[in-house]
Amino acid sequence: MRTKRQGLIIWFQHMKNIKHIKRYGHLLYASKKLKYAVIYVDQEFLENIEFKLLKLPFVTKVERSYKPFLRTDFENAKPDKAKQYDYKMGI
Image (cartoon, rainbow, N blue to C red; front, side):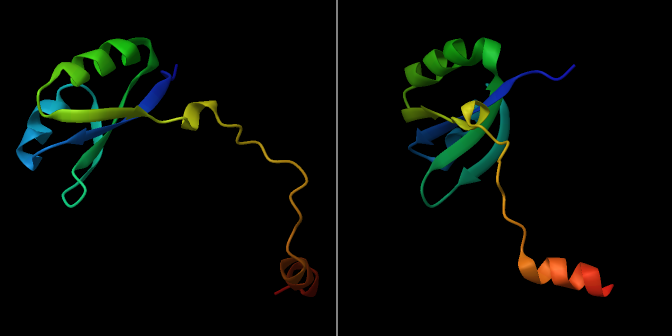
């Protein structure tokens, strides 16, 4: 069974604080230049973890990812005519 997960974007002040952020979820990416990190957490604990992260003194902002709520099944996708022609030719 797969767990429902959601991403959190955490804006912080110093890179040395990454060690503390890792404790709250699965760290996926951290930007040195822009000073933010992307972590994934279970949706069950999302609000609790977000509240805890906002209480940390080095965190400036926490944003949620909306990817789990976007529709990803696309309809009426038009196929590429050049690819169809290549398939008919047997290339």
